[in-house]
Length: 556
Image (cartoon, rainbow, N blue to C red; front, side):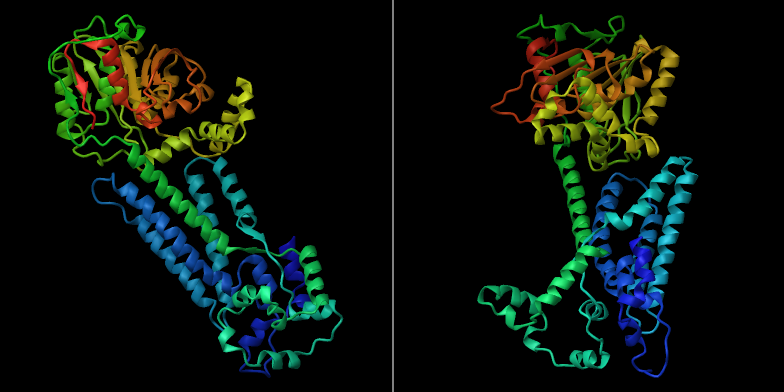
């Protein structure tokens, strides 16, 4: 409504300085007062020359570094020749932004900058609608349209409206004399105050110097104040937009750096096997009696599965060496998938899909699936997206402790309904490949011969994966996982072992399994992230239950 009113009332407000500037060399030529000659209209739509030129700075300083972070992180795990489609699209977009800024500098044809901007906006809208339509997810079209309509208000803020000469004279009932105004504009400007006049005057407030420069009558100040209250002009604030881009860029860089810092850096073999039995201090503990594949030639205890979970963070020849060191005494236990580990930690990660390994006992056909999320780069964004609502609940509880008194039903509603926007977008395909693989195994050998293993977020994904096979007797074993109670509800067939101080145990709720074991962690020497590492779980189980071969993990 405000934009329509700005176009309708442009002749009552503007002095049409753009028209005067365009035809200053042809004073006798009469030019029609179009909408693109009115500064208030252009500012209302964010199409004035200053805003269009500011787009160059905002786009370059904001989008380019952010795109570089995403591209660098993605290409770090890509094999082969990368596609040049997105770099080409980005280059063309940057050229278009600078082309529009150049058009805004023209004297007589600067309206083409506005027309070109509207054309580009229309093209982006059409591409967005067509893109989601081709993706066969029509609900996203509503998101695109709503975002398009709301973008004018989301990236704007209230600003103090500066009256035009015509408006000021009309409010104060003073006749407008353009010749006098032009003579005033031709007066010389103090050169020593030209660059930072307002800044210097602000610093000289305390000495009452500002009252001697740029003094305005109180009636003028009051008139502008009343007008700004009654007619709040909305203008795209590129300063706020630029700050937003910088914040997003720094946040993305922080998340990537944090993911790289907390990830496992097993650059050398981690397995040791002195073949000397280690006696446990508390062998009657329930975790020591858990055994899978009892009838096979390679029975697997909880300690064995913890070692398998650690192997999911190895690669190349080191991973093969560690597997042989820990499980050389079980020749029938082999890695069926992949037949060869990736040669480097930054090898292809199959996009956002979860990579996995399948270990099988050839004598019994019992399968152990380990999820191999490397928690680097974009994987951290994937984890934050999957548990974002639960993390938001924890943050809200830290801000307002009274939230912790909510009943379980309210917390679950908060987490479930907090993801309402995700329902409008295509569903996540993180577990698509491993789900198809496990489904084939269930049909081949039965769900009672499949165990899904993972630690930290891998363990959380193991529980999410198991929720797709609740009727197939598939089992999960997770070490220091985040909770999934508010996401999937209770999962009966599974075992999880977590430290009481693990950082991941605070996400969601661990009351999602009937068999949950909480183990202590040394508060004096270990942080919450260290308590949640797989090496800590391995050391605890070894100390509690012992091992017939004395296997252990190096503290790398």
